[in-house]
Image 1 (cartoon, rainbow, N blue to C red):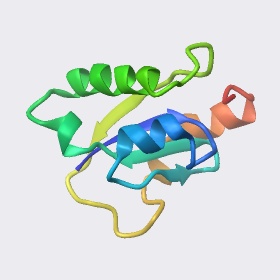
Image 2 (image 1 turned 135 degrees about the horizontal axis):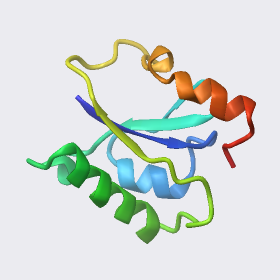
Image 3 (image 1 turned 180 degrees about the vertical axis):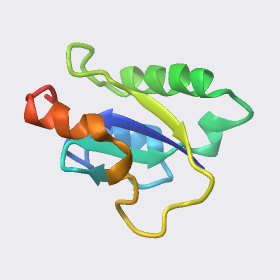
Image 4 (image 1 turned 60 degrees about the vertical axis):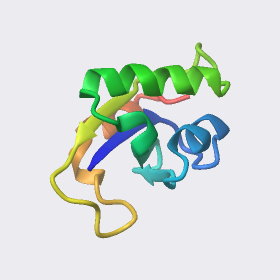
Length: 103
């Protein structure tokens, strides 16, 4: 499974909802939004290519370029078995939230 993570705390952000569609947007540690990368974006692309395509989608869907833009793409060997499975993987989330780096 390939997923994308951005700083944020609103699973209804239209740019994330539209770029993740048909997959749901989830929340990790109350300050990172993530979703499984849709097949239409993933195709046979590398993680760096997915990052570029997904970032372009976010901008096209209206994400403000001046907002925190730490888009990350990751792959996992198995799908999640509960709504928030990646909380332990993002040590940086705690620091980002604590330091107020998430807008």
